[in-house]
Image 1 (tube, rainbow, N blue to C red):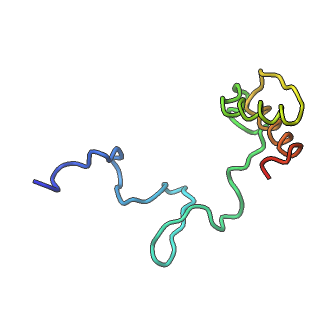
Image 2: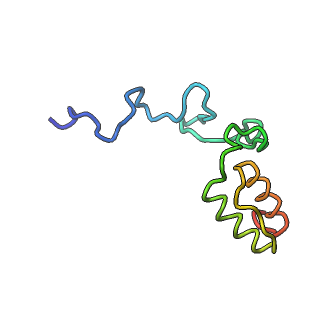
Image 3: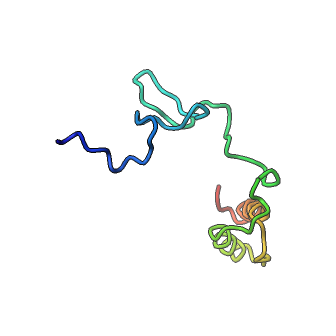
Length: 103
């Protein structure tokens, strides 16, 4: 019968209420009950010093490598291709300021 089949697209065996996040989530509801992300939570919790990154000593990602290549060319600089994620992030911030990108 229609409606008796399990939801094939639902891979979450838990609560299926459509809520985003768990008890530590930063979602907020308004008077109408719709949820939002962000808002007045007191700052950007995603911003972290690269020295404090758990994965900061891993090799830079492909996206970081590509963006650094573009920034370094525009800035007329050469960088080592053997950077960590944290080092790449610091160079990206520096080169964005130098080239005017990312502002």
